[in-house]
Image (cartoon, rainbow, N blue to C red):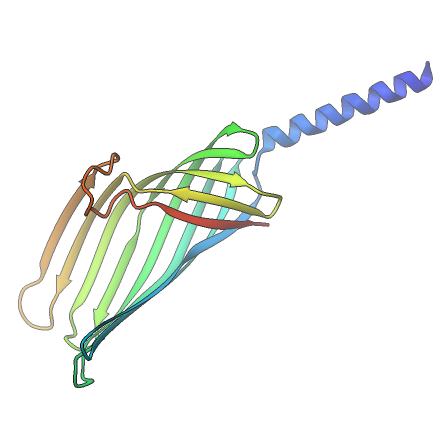
Length: 202
């Protein structure tokens, strides 16, 4: 009888522990992700290059809600056919974001993300300064492979931005843009581009 009670106690403790872990979700977990890209285009003897480095660090402060912050840089340069640099810009990027997760089944999750990208750039050749503030809404799917790695995919359904261009001489220009098209019905639009990446948990 004592053995039976002991076994029953162990089973109940195990069930209780599993239920507690499930209710806690990923709360207290840190994660690291980011974006890294480089491109080069040559037209005749003219050449343009662009590089983006944007590491992102986040923290689950609730079982299914996380905050993240990306800080990085975008650089681009254009040289004409004679090798003279006609454009050379550097842009500092800050991207705070928040995500809410919903479990679909097992290790598969649906999430919604809201991000507020802020960019401040300067062209070294023209001394033209650019600042941009935006709002991006992106749904996505996240599959947890193990305790330290997930694979995710997402696309942007809403993009709102305000960009101010301040030249070295003359008046500054402010542009406002709004783009919402979750069905991606226009082939040349920027929204809806599918992004696939990995996220490290620790």
